[in-house]
Image (cartoon, rainbow, N blue to C red):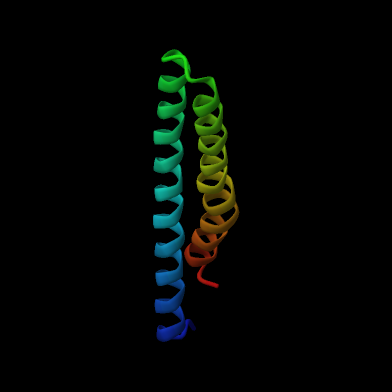
Length: 81
């Protein structure tokens, strides 16, 4: 049987991870757009920086928080562990 406070903490942690993953992914998409706009506008240094930071933010959002953190937590909750 699952302890109510432990389940509430697990849900709050899952919510924080999901919100963080969404925020990091959104920031990554915005930075990618800024990078592409900068490159097409002729500012290669800013464009390269923004594209690099966008890729890093997308990695953090999708892989580090989404795939490696949120997905296992969701699977544990649905399995009832």
